[in-house]
Image (cartoon, rainbow, N blue to C red):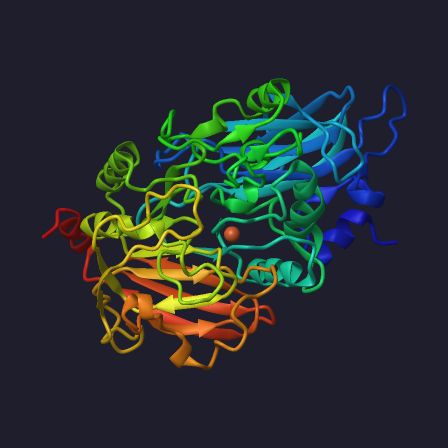
Length: 516
Ligand SMILES: [Fe+2]
């Protein structure tokens, strides 16, 4: 008879899970021969990148995390460079309040921080509870400079739809080193309960399948950015705010995710919160140093640098502290490729969120520091603009914090010669919108209608080269020395776009950073 372990491995799963699924997203460990039974699991073990930003041999981190209902448990995480393990990491627990949508019970967030790892090393791990092995798997630490990398990017996913599962499956099929999500990675309100129902079952499914999802999160680091659906609630003026009165388990971004902690300790525009002080205090206790530092952070992977920003509507991107931190971060890296990732796209010709343009005022700063690509979502489709240089004519409405009309007029210089095939040297930044990650699509009928890809407010400048709105899709990036390939894959696994970007050497990006 096929064991559960053999079944999961043959079906494409990676981790043995001695955790049996019950109804309602709960999992039960086997009853022990003696002693207390473990509490029910609400989220089975997954990995997260942990706090490290810069690449440093011997200083790599990874976090193994899981969630349970309240209850006593003795957990251990063993790890090592083989399945003989050899080392153990201490396990910490932090309570979270119960939410509105699920079983109404509070949770415990469990984490084991694994530190001091080498770069580019496969690490095996095992989670044990009350002595019994519950899960085992492996991950690979980050690649150093000079090594090729592959990552997948998409945004606006996870609301329990089959399209979420198809995107997860085709992401898994690409065997990425990591995922770089562009925000809104769960709907509707970014709560623990929604992560349990819509996010983890899809990206940490036991078995890979187009209608099932994939076992990604137990093996593949998942980076993301905070977006509007992580901060759902309205203050008296109708502005975005995390409302702990309505959702006691709000802002799960800061508690379920474990991302680099090199962001500002006191960002100029921290995520706003309202509700009973006791609930906010409990959230802060669980998030620890992650709130508010994880709103903005950066990291390196191979020859690429990623700057991840909070672009929510409570942000004023003209703020001096934010701009200074961004400039400092982009100056400090010697990576060949510089990516900036945030949720609200500066250049988007769709109808839904066209006026939310506040991040445009950062374009001159990005250009001065040699940024190659900006990745965003929010508009639920795929848009590939031509290389753009943009000179804002003043701040426009970018400082109108909270508003939906944040238009920033300015002067476009569009590189129409770049085609990503015969001409692979862009003069300007590629602002990719990859927001077709699973949620319902926007802008039906735009796909084959380039005449709709302009706006009078932008002088009808034809800055978009490709737009696909009739299917969900994901972006695959291969970064190999001075050559970058981006391939757009749809929810059936078909290639729908591909560009190559090249530069002569690393010298080019550092010269651009100096404004030469
Ligand atoms: Fe969004």
